[in-house]
Length: 180
Image (cartoon, rainbow, N blue to C red; front, top):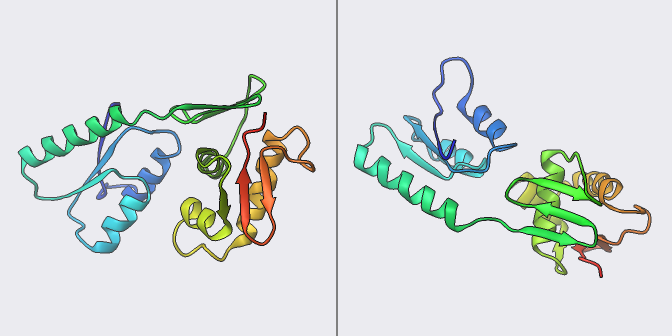
């Protein structure tokens, strides 16, 4: 679908769980419709990937305007395909290829790689990567980052012990380097 309207108050499953699962494979806009008007519910939905949040009861005209706005943003912000020395990252389809073979990445591995590759050449601190990929409250969980960087290196590097893409900046973070 081009856009999903999701009610958080589903009868047999938590709407936040549905939203999280959708974001593993669905990149188009998701607008939440809900009677849940607590700030925590709204923030949680937006942090999990909702593009907008509309409280019930709502006016039809407002819903239609929000749909038009979400669709305008979706078509104007097409993500590029990044190519780095045999590594291809298609940000729109969330597909990563190495030497034309499609890699099987977990959602977290993909999110980490996409964030780093969009910031090619920049040092990204441990705290920044943890906050952006895992969310607020995980800034001090550096063991998560070490584990996922090691997994990513095994998948994308020719020799994980001598990485060419993900370079460790000791005591600071990691740098993604495009290579030659």
